[in-house]
Amino acid sequence: MAETLFNHSRTPNETTEFKELTKRDAQSQLAHELSKLLLTAPAHQRQQTEHMFQGFQKLFLKFLQDIGPSVEWQKIETLPGDAVKNYSDLKEPSEDVLNEMLNKLVVIKLNGGLGTSMGCTGPKSVIPVRSDLTFLDLTVQQIEHLNKTYNVDVPLVLMNSFNTEEDTQKVLKKYRGFNVKIYTFEQNKYPRINRESMLPVATSVENSDPEAWYPPGHGDFYESFHKSGLLQQFIDQGKEVCFVSNIDNLGATVDVNILNTMLNHSSDPHPEFIMEVTDKTIADVKGGTLIQYEGKLRLLEIAQVPKEHVDEFKSVKTFKIFNTNNLWMSLRSIASLVQEGMLDMEIIVNHKHLDYGINVIQLETASGAAMKDFARAIGINVPRKRFLPVKKTSDLLAVMSSLYLMKNGTLEMSPKRAFPTVPLVKLGENHFAKVRDFLRRFASIPDMLELDHLTVSGDVTFGKGVSLRGTVIIIANHGDRIDIPAGAILENKIVSGNLRILDH
Image (cartoon, rainbow, N blue to C red; front, top):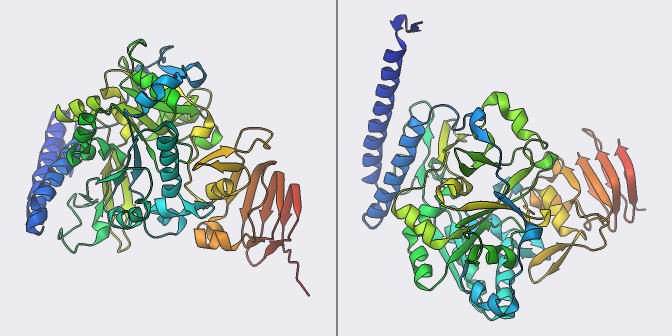
């Protein structure tokens, strides 16, 4: 059956040819625009900018070539029995090898994100999360404690974006007296593409609108780490393994049992890549999962799933685990894969609407997607406590509360909590989304040790010493205000309407 295009009949072969010509045209137009943009770069930045543009063109070409979902659903195979190990089955290293093992480790935190989702400016890592300590403070404390306890030299490396580089460098000065060597490198800066014209929004490299550029996701880690020279530097120092995680995941601490699995050469060939996964709950249905595909273990993200199978992907019964983005990798494997151009990560197309009315796309990749390119990769099903991300103020409320105790920069669930699950907390966007507004609504953080579920919506404030237990729902409708009085104990309660306790 021939297709009709602008009233001209085309056979399927002609259609394919037409699409190919369109792609080639988009590719050559982009190359032309990038050449013009390169001329606006300052002389001292031109070589670096050219290198970045080359990387972007590869990404753009891959985007043009990708047609349809990258996974054929019927080709998904059952996970082999040894593909995902249980954390409880890992061997604990003996005390006498701990020092040697830890000296082979590099800790890398993905630090490219801004705190805009919580109404903050600057890097997310400098938002206070506990006792006025920031994500970065807690991370530095953890590594320093490790270095002092075992008399080792585990370095901390931050992958910044152009959004966070300058502010992070200022903050790092305060850690000069600490027993931690801190290194940074900057990931690439790519141009956002106008969705209509398929051309860059930017008109100049220097003094350009910051909205015209973006950091291309954490899959950019491999290339940027290699390009920075740090990868080779650590290999030359005798380092063998890196542990990569998001800086806002407060559960992502160094684990010697997982490190031992990476380094124990006597084990059935030791892995080059470990992805920490954990059991999926209803709150995690969109998280990437592990599948066996064409004989290889790989990450499956919701964006790769054909629409008719999305419900199956979200099913907790079918796909029981999800990716925490805590990744352990062999440094030498990363180096050889980058040098040989063997990394093939799926493109994530992120649609954005700029403030001045233009619809753009940004092309990204995810670091976990490189799993299939490593020769020996496994998953480890870790306890939920290793996944404690703070994405919203509802997460912040939990980590600031008595649910957690803090020791040497590490948060641990209070032993007073009867069961190990974290309560489900939902705070209304309008009144609680920004950190500043959120903090103003609590005279003190409520006791949540016996809480299962909390929903708060509308103009609600909490007095000092409030206790929340079981399921608590507090809803102030438009025009209403609810003030929870100091010392109140709410257990399995729904509060709505108006409630104001006035002093007199």
